Image (tube, rainbow, N blue to C red):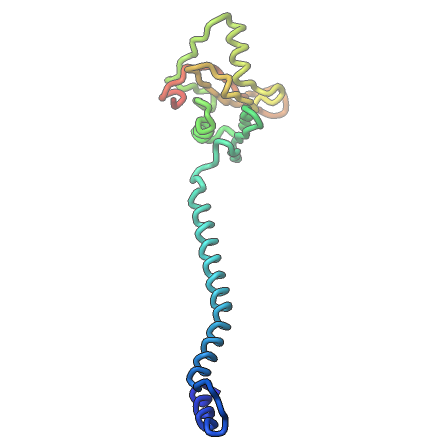
Amino acid sequence: MNDDELITVLREQRGTITMDTPVEQIIGRGRAVRSRRRLPAAALATAVLATAVLTAAAVTAAVTALPASHPAGTHDAKLAAWTVVRQPGDGIVVTVSELRDPAGLQSTLRADGVPASVTFTGQGNPACQGYPGTGTQSQRRLLLGSVATVRQGSPNVMTIYPAALPSGAGLAIAAAMQNYSGPRDSIELTVSLVQASPRCTGS
């Protein structure tokens, strides 16, 4: 029964039923009650829609915030050719598995706070100049050893300690294939202290 039919019936019964409240007021209250019953469902639907919109916005923001290149800083950068893994504390472990993408490795190290020049196949950066360290040769070797060490038995793995770099110094890292008497070739990393400069180490 719709509202018009209900009004007609009530008007026909007006003569037989005694009421103090006008029919229009009763109908108005009925409509108000029905409207209130519909509100929770509408509110729930609105809340669900709002949650979906906020979730979509959050996902979009998260995707937009991701860097276009491989992560650096507190993250680990891992590629097939090489990996850069930050250890707890100050250590950064570099592993070179293939002589590919030296520029990518160099950019990752610089983003991690290591002023570095990286070259593969043993060709150094001509813009790099040796760091004018003081003291004896063994003292300079000890200084270099406190900054970067190649893992014994794994010449393609190096640990760098950026906080130990002396002021104005950077690292020149070279990777080359070394032919051993064993059954396979191996990549060997070498490192030296150089003067930090924009053309050599990027800073």
